[in-house]
Image (cartoon, rainbow, N blue to C red; front, side, top):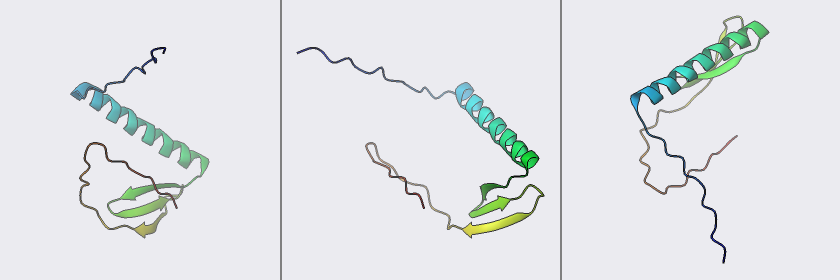
Length: 86
């Protein structure tokens, strides 16, 4: 039998510099997306506390729904997570 080629495992090392760079990049991307949506006259949706909110380009805020706050999840190694969409 031929030996199977093993996939190279990517290891994420959590250090403060990497994490802060990722957080900064995410904040900049969100800011740019909101700015572009307003310029194009599009609405954008986000969560604020336990509420789902849609903000129109003119600044009008519409509450879509409220979700109860959940306690932190306790996930063990090997847990399979399923994503449910509407």
